[in-house]
Image (cartoon, rainbow, N blue to C red):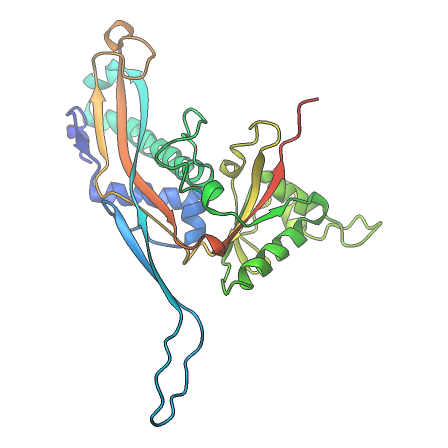
Amino acid sequence: MASSNITKSGTLFSEKQVGEVFNKVAGHSAIAKLSGQTPIPFAGIENYIFSMDGEASIVGEGENKPAGPAEFKKVSVKPVKVVYQHRLTDEFCYMSDEAKLPYLAQFQDGFAKKIARAIDIMYFHGLNPATKEAATAVKDIAFNAKVSQEQTFDAANADDNVNDAVNTIVAKDGTPTGIAMAPKFRTALGAIKEKTGSKVPMYPEFRGVGNPGTFMGLTCDINNSLAYNDKTAAGSKNTVAIVGDFQNALKWGYTKNIAMEKIEYGDPDGQGDLKRTNQIVLRAEAYIGCGIIDPESFVRIVETVPAAA
């Protein structure tokens, strides 16, 4: 966006900048990274799934052609508005265009990171990232709600958890392509030794803050947004890893326009009157959406939250 336009309310990120924002998102969002997709701008899209079971049949002369079992269903992906805003001194209004550029670059980078985290928190957990409470717009379409296939997390055998999850998906004719891990799951893999009594780690690439990119042939991403619900009520389930076909059984996207505005009056974020504090607010709004096309192509590895001591 031309810096001279930043003082105008309702300014739009340029098409190039929108692309840059979501390129950064792909580097910070597990969903974006594992899907391997180039998100297509949309205002709400519908995916049609045509499943064809059974096999082709030989038809002899004079014989009837048999009908094959098939299912046709529709999965909608609707965008959700997300907002990120930041306060800064009103001196920004009087800066030269050149002096404003570093602020705008930092804001754009911060916006990309917040959007990335929001995608994962909303669609892994069905929560509002800002309040950590269930969000009506996403709670029924998130992984926690849509994916019923589960493995119970066993830290000492976390690698077996992954293998069992893969086998569950393959048994239903699925093809898992990736795994999203919480840091806790990485720690468990890094602690596994080669054999009983040995001190040699079986997966040294997962020790510390290792993020090797692949595991058991699956594209791997380690992201703390997966552990966002670690403080839920006792007896509930936390997701520590998700194995699945992120490349084909999931779709995500964003709207082409990202609005940015400079707010000079009022109290837009509940932190006091802007004029009184000599501040302004930079606000950006985007619409993003994600949909699980085939829930049986995913398995959640979960642990039950223990009761407080």
